[in-house]
Image 1 (cartoon, one colour):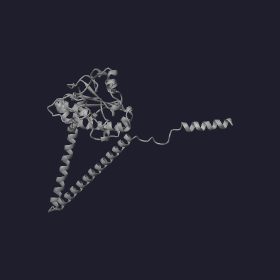
Image 2 (cartoon, rainbow, N blue to C red):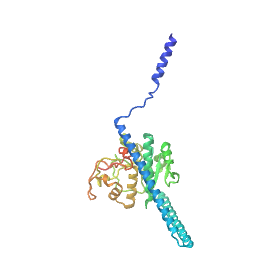
Image 3 (cartoon, one colour):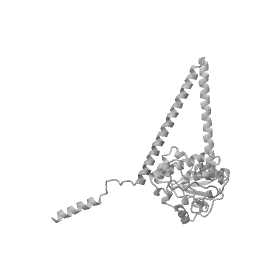
Image 4 (cartoon, helix red, strand yellow):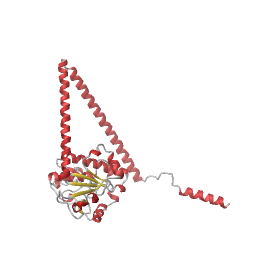
Length: 328
């Protein structure tokens, strides 16, 4: 009898210890966000299909046009000349592309020695979900694309690049060939001999970044969803004993509302300033007009925040940000 009671008690304890197999129901707010995300993904897929269809139609149009040109040739000799002319044109285009590619490679290689050093700190990956990491990876990809196009590119660094962050970056086409510094170590270890030149761009800094110094290494925190981790980059920089600064957006723009400033937007602003040496022009060229409120380009009012919404995904309005806020 005692054994039966103990057996029944053990069975009961086992049942109680098993996790609930029923999925946790989503809140109304979560359901709205999920629906919004699904609609956005459906719209994106539809747009992608339309672009693909348009390309196919254009290719078909060009093919028919070429066939008509060939068929209109009066002689075989004229036809062969037309074919040879097309081959030469293709060859010239390929050579031009190769030259442009080589020029970009040379500029990026030169930037390693003479360019502005910009670090994207990837050590916050453990604070983000896989989808948030994916959002950051897309921003990094855009950062590299913008830098490649610059006449005066910067020297980009990815530090703390490991784990899921590294896995997702490795899935990007051609990532292994990027002319960029990839470090699994923290910037504080990878650049320990340059500690006095490290400057973390953070919203909570009291120092306004008036000029860019080629000797300095500017760090951007790669952290999606700032609402959960306010002040985290300032705290990190303070504990490490490195300098901090914030962009002077508040001196030039009045934002329409408090929104998210993405990593790629900050990188682009820095690169633009390197090129034209003008903060106001840099902000106005990078920041979408609809996000600048009704501020006239000649006015210089202050604002409460310099966060800008990423235009890629409407579901990320409270995500994809870094700790950079405007001056008061």
